[in-house]
Length: 385
Ligand code: 5AD
Ligand code: FES
Image 1 (tube, rainbow, N blue to C red):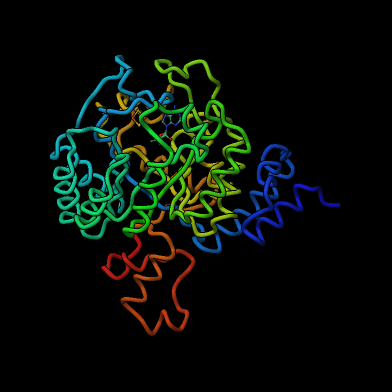
Image 2: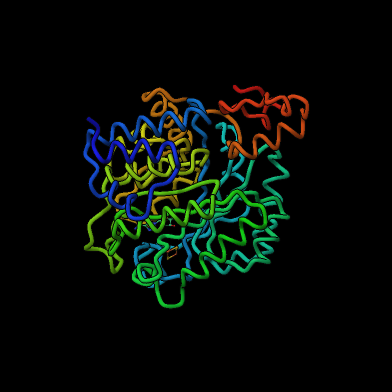
């Protein structure tokens, strides 16, 4: 006899959605035994599209200055104790060069909303990275900007953009953010990014203050509607110098459940096992992979600034060199039967587009390698080393 939740899991795997209220009901009542079925279904779907491959992204935290004041974030402007730094263009390019040597083919430029990084400065940087490393993708994660700015970054060569909605519920959004930020503008940004043609990443924190399962269901339905290419989720973790210092962190289990549900709802999505997940549990990222994640984002920032980019307390990897993180990540993936793949790691829909462009007859015959082959890299003759 299967349980109500087991039936819900099978339905979710089949239909990619559940009737109103049932996503919240599933997530709020899932037992450990039922979760195993959820993970098994999630892994099946993940392996159908991406095989055993894990994609690498090199995270460059290039500025800790932020004009925003999000209540959960250690880099909020009201936190006078945050140490502020800004990497120079030379430093950022050096991170990319080093990252390239370490097999990274995606660079994620992440920072606070720093007014010093004007559109011109960002475009210049993106162009320089693309010129030095034409076989690499550049992802931006620099917050809310007007549509025209996003258009300029795209023309400069940025192809992906990460901007978590944090929560889709307007009331909840208002509890997490100062009055000058709105969910309406956040959604406007995400819509613009999609329309411009970016591979877009949205996402939430799991267990953030005031979050309910109903709000999480709203987030899941928002994602199903937006159809992002990436979804970044990790547990909320309190930062001691923020108004949320005394709230408890999100849990490992809730985050793993949600990763698996997202994989079933958006089968082809790029889903990172995040640093925050590795921070609340030493095996968090490996368990994330086993729950359906297929991306890891080791830190490429220079070691001397890492401890200053503290969104939350206890962040891991702040003392390690990039090369150590890279090796560590390969080992962690292998420990759960997955393998780091050296390639740009585009969303499968974009991999199809790329291979159709280079070999139309093959693609038309249905000959694309859906198991995660990297046509972009292969076409550049780099092999898969
Ligand atoms: N705990 C967990 N994640 C956090 N972020 C910001 N502050 C915290 C925190 N205290 C996440 C947000 C943001 C991303 C860059 O980091 O979701 O979008
Ligand atoms: Fe800058 Fe939160 S305060 S992103």
